[in-house]
Amino acid sequence: MTARSSQAASGAVVAEPGVVARPSVAVLIPAYREAENIGPVVTAALAAGLGRVLVVDDGSNDTTAGEARRAGAEVLELTANCGKGGALAAGAAALSESVVVLLDADLVGLEPEHVRALAEPVLAGNTDMSRGAFQGGRWGTSTAQQVAPQLNGQRAIYREQLLAVPGLATSRYGVEVAITRAAKEGGWRCVDVPLEGVSQVTKEEKRGFWRGLMLRFKMYRDILGTLLTRSHD
Image 1 (tube, rainbow, N blue to C red):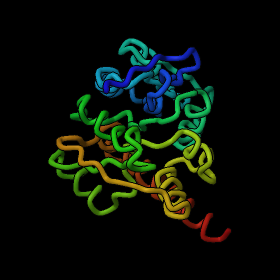
Image 2 (cartoon, one colour):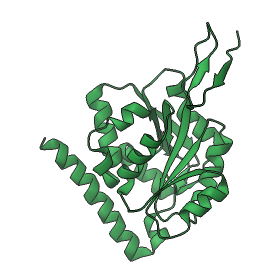
Image 3 (cartoon, helix red, strand yellow):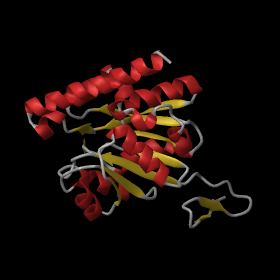
Image 4 (tube, one colour):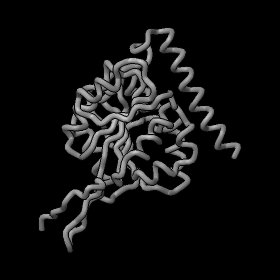
């Protein structure tokens, strides 16, 4: 039997009698000063055909918001920089869909099938969270993800579970650690999804070597801070 459903005004999928509806889904992309990179990511997310695509501009002082809109995304602009965790919290709170696919704004090689592959295990009810695993892309980012896969920001997750992650809004770059810990402590069913050919633009490439290196150290500081904060609770 072919399932048929309709889209309610709230964004939820409403099934006809006797039909089990798949959860509604949106794509959520936090972005800070990503004017040069955001367009192709939005284009791939929209082409996946899953639902709304929301970019949260995290207080950027460049044209990130404008480039995201030009690519077709909805944009939520934050007046101050809240960090990646804060941007995800604000975006998830602004959405109504049951499932959110999280994508970084600086991805390279992202295709619509990658986005659909991330969403499918959660939409099918087979898992509570899927996490992307870079493969066959740029050597540096693929290797880094193999060493620390828990830091990959490409995920699909139930929106309410994301919003319930302890310390989400204040985690900044430590957000992936916070989500991974919540999944482990909550006994979530999780699966890794290969993302063949996908990688990221490095901070050093985006900001220059020394500025990028400083941002990388800041990221590591936020990650360590998230780990230490919960370990002392």
